[in-house]
Image 1 (cartoon, rainbow, N blue to C red):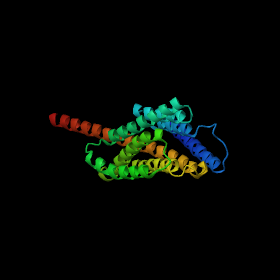
Image 2 (cartoon, helix red, strand yellow):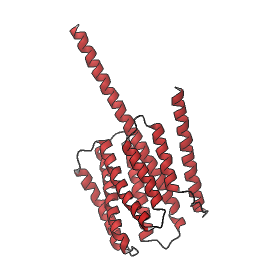
Image 3 (cartoon, rainbow, N blue to C red):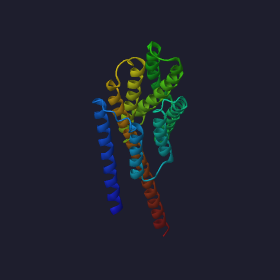
Image 4 (cartoon, rainbow, N blue to C red):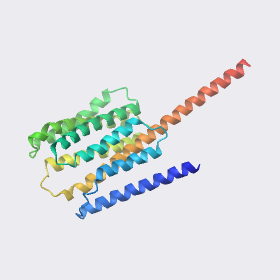
Length: 251
């Protein structure tokens, strides 16, 4: 009991630190205070990872890999050194693929036709925006194409899940899909159409979307794990009941 209370207390403390850190960073960005010495995305990712390690009943290595990769990728893209940026880009691609695999695994997706249909409008939207953008450097074009495809696949996967797999986890997954797509859309518009504007126009929004989207993903995973644990316990109880009834009948 004491251990459970300590766990809840630590969870509240880390959540409070996370919210306070996000608020301070966003306010500082809006007021143009330089806090670049504190890496925002790696810190947010580390705090959410800490929350997961406290909250989860059965640690999933895939979640650890996804968030460690997120933290490392966020560190790589802070550098202006080209090899670091390449590592960061490759890390982002792998990260998005792992998230999609994780969602499919947790929701036990078997029918991929609705996903393919749901991907189409997102592919069309991002392809159109890419075709009319004037400020894209040549070396960024193909990485953007890959990112457009991956984000469209992720958005299509979550949109199809919203309609095909109604359960207690749907809300958190839908929130994650909405926020992560909005984050990519914001960055895409900023870099490709409005790069002449100062960072204070988009950075606070991007920071908020980043933190809330991955917090939503953490909540989705926790709820999915708890649902699976409850289902497994229910099956065990049913088996025990059947075995008890058999023993009574034999006696």
